[in-house]
Length: 527
Image (cartoon, rainbow, N blue to C red; front, top):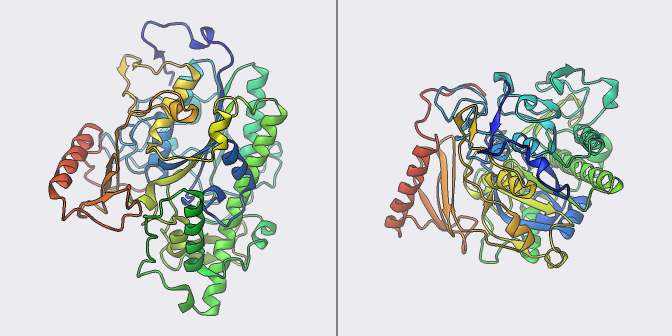
């Protein structure tokens, strides 16, 4: 469907009106990675390339996603809360406006807005915002794309329950072993390699570029090249209890977290590492070795991308943003999955489960799906040599302003000198609730304080200042926390401050009723 963007009375493309010194923007999102899984955020997993980006840029300590893959992708691409964009749950069409399972007609994507502003727009990797309903990269603003409709595919020769995934180059299905992709390939390499090819197309056309790389790693089924996995076997035999304490200590040392925030205790359901048999320890060690290998492969791909940008003379004026779509994933429960003749290979089924997800999300509570900090807190690394003042990067100070994926669209519009549209084909476009991160990146200007909201599967939250109201499930009681003293959500203040709870609850409900969170669909569809 052709989409006509009407930008008030401005009929000329903004690219005709602006100079060509606007930054390129590369947005990299990984899938199911926990808050503490990379070096700058406390991990023992070596991530030298991300470490370098962090050292030369800035890191956000209180950046948020939506707690789940599809909703975060919808928010990231549109700058709206996910229900406003039509994806309040997953990609099933549940009938209610906020739950149609695809990007709605009254939102626009970053690619649509930036392409109208003269940018070359491209994406690689996981789409997962309604492909099966006809919402595809090439009809939502991307000039070029190499994508999977959803995710879970890591190897070109992968089999198993995710092995049937189809691959699309622009608007045509292509074979996964097509020679142009240099098979056999591993996903993090391939998405990055193709992204660089798209960058070359932008350079040839003499356009600034917006590149969105949506990695499928480290989402289940966990698998990676054997030589990388082998580097980590035995290194997780210390267990989640010790490793979590170590991550927490590094987070304290770096200033990422405040010393007043208690480390969330091991949940009762998660066994103490020392209580396991040797056979169990070996099994769990190998599961986490596979996951760690996926993080390393992501990091290697970051290095390849940075090298490519540097070789092309584009690194200095490219804003690179790196984040995760939700917290660590506990979906497979305590035992996880560890199936196959050679777990970690393209034909296996490995889920790291709740025990290791508890490590992934150090120091926070809960996991993917939930609106407690373990589900919604993500790293955000921003690197932009020409835009971030050197003294700001060199200070190694954390940006602790509460920020959210809804802010990415506003940032891109701001930096690109673009115009966010008011209408599409005479339909009103939902205004952006986000704010540009530029003042935080450049240390120039103000970033006004505002209230942030969440809802997913009945889990819900609101954050205003340091007050956070959160519930677990639609029938769960509201909990209240002072995040300045207790970001790990250990001391529930709800009983002692009932009036504040009620005031914030009403504020959340007012947002929910105006943002397509309510009414909820009558029936839940399949994913």
